[in-house]
Amino acid sequence: MKNTITCMELNQWINEERDFVILDVLPPEYHGSRHIPRAINACVYEMTFIDQLRELVRDAHTCIVVYDSSAKSMASACAARKLAAAGFQQVLELVGGMDEWEGSGYPVDVLGPDMDEEAVITDGLHQVDRSMSRLEWIGRNIWKRHHGTISIKDGELRFEKGVLTGGSVTMDMGTIKDIDLEDDTLNKLLIRHLSSDDFFDVEQHPTAKFEILECAAIPGATSGTPNCVITGTLTIKDISRQILIHASVVAGENGGVLAHSCFDIDRTQWNINYGSGKIFENLGMHLVNDIISLELFLTAP
Image 1: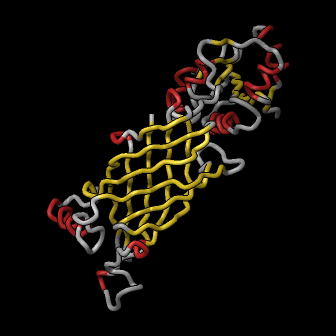
Image 2: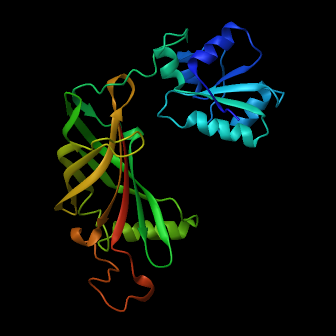
């Protein structure tokens, strides 16, 4: 049984005013930007996709033509599978999606700005928004783990010709929090432990800092994966070590910056030795994994 339809065939069906439904399965902002005439919208990425569609199309025997952005995307194929599994009897996938439809010169309803227009980061210094940025941490041992946050004290990112060329981020170590221990007494005890000279010695070293030395683009990086490799210097307890991290750095609103990175460090390289099997023996329940996982979220208008 045929399960695809070409742009030429779909245009003919529209001109013949056949009884069928055209379904745009992209998010509503893309549908609002431009879509095929007569198309209705239900986003296939929504958990309620089938529920939404059943409200729009009551008869499971109705012929539905689904489309997404291009031949590269799997959204329309995913939608077709979901619809078939939900009992819809006649589902056709538009070959080539919106790109081929528009590229073939067929009519398009344009209602809003072009969502495909790539956002650009403004050159110059971008100051990090402390209220919208944070560092998250995870520490572990054999039996359990703890996780929490550290606030950003200040930071800046420098761009030239849209490329990250430098900058730094300073963490306020006095703001370290644990968010998994619900018992208030145990939570405060852990924070006191982490703030002591067993770990970060916050009284003597109130800040930690990451300074960017260089940044290289990752060829072929897709959305949702790291797009650059950053070499920088991480300073904790006045000890500086060069590290390499993978990060996603993209344009935010009005030429701003959004950046995200997940990486691990070996804490013993910064003289954070409590419970380390490298340093001590017979630790028992006091053994602590040497690896700390860090996740950095930055917003810089």
